[in-house]
Every structure is written in C-alpha cells, then in structure tokens.
Image 1 (cartoon, rainbow, N blue to C red):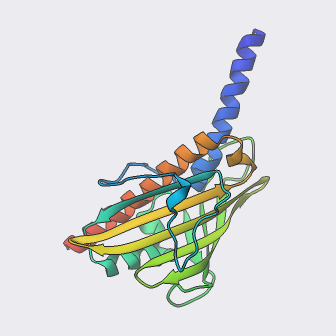
Image 2 (image 1 turned 135 degrees about the horizontal axis):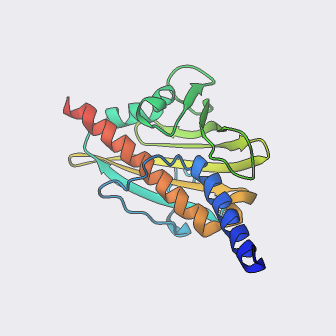
Length: 214
C-alpha cells in the first residue's frame, strides 16, 4: 500500500472514531427531523430552567424544538417516566431510577445505549448517569451527568422546556457536550448531537401524538 493511501486510510479511521463516540451519546437511532423542528446552535439564546442553562464554555452544543399535538400531561409523563424510555426510544437499551417517586430536583437515573466499535473503548455500551439539577413540573427540566465507558468520558448538560400552545405543546431542548473525544472534532460532534436531539424529539412527538389519538 502506498504512503498516500495509508495516510488517507488513517484519516478515514480517525474521522470514523470521532463520529461513533458522540453517536452513542447523542442517542441516534433513526434520526429523523421532526416536523416543525428548528435548530439553533448559537450560544446567545440558551434555554434555561430556573435560570440555569447549558454549559456556556462548551464548544459542542445544539438547540431545537417542535410542536407536539398532545396534552401537556401526556408529553410530560412520557419525558419524565425515565424507566419507560426504552419502550419508545429504541436507542435506549436500559434505564433505571436511582431514587423513587415523581422526578424531582436531585433525582438521579442511570441509562445505557449501545457504543459502536471505536478505538476509544471496547465496551459494548455507554453508561450515562444523569442528575436532575432544576425542575418545574410541566414547564422545564435540566439534568447533567457523564457518559462513560472504559477509556472514555463525555460530560453533558441537557435542558428541556415545555410550553402550551394552541393545539399542543411547544417542546424545546438544548444540550452541550464536553470531553476530549468530542472537542477533537467540534463540527462532526455537533452535527451528530443535532441528529440525536431531533431523533429524540421525533420519538417523543410520535409516541405522545399516538397516545393522544386513542
């Protein structure tokens, strides 16, 4: 193999590794943009919950939203019933609460998603431990926490807001990621985070509207 071809192969392998790491964290299944979604990665208009937002220093960030044609109580229940996430989000392999009762400030939950083969780790899954930092029932929620595997760590901050509008609920979400793997290729990591958040919204919208139609 020529030196030029070997160099090209190495570059392809590096780019693949950078893509597969945030792929797992971003919960990419069938990442389909939801109808009415509008994304904005700009740092000037971050979402907040009780005045707290995403990591202002993070290079990898994305914000998006969509209108879900379902009652607020249906949307909120789906989003906060963490242990049932695997029922409607195929990228979530498992999810468990580390406390009990309705989700509240200080609640913690651990969830996993498959980790594609990559040079950073040989583990089959990525484990995320999230802690709710702020919550206003029916209005907003903010959690933080690391996603880890052997030899890999990515720290995330995630904000969701819920606003009743005519015919449904405007759901908006914003997330930031920090860590060596994502910081090494910010455009690629941001693009994949975008797909992950829009895929999550798509699943939430599809499931909530199906329930509302029953």
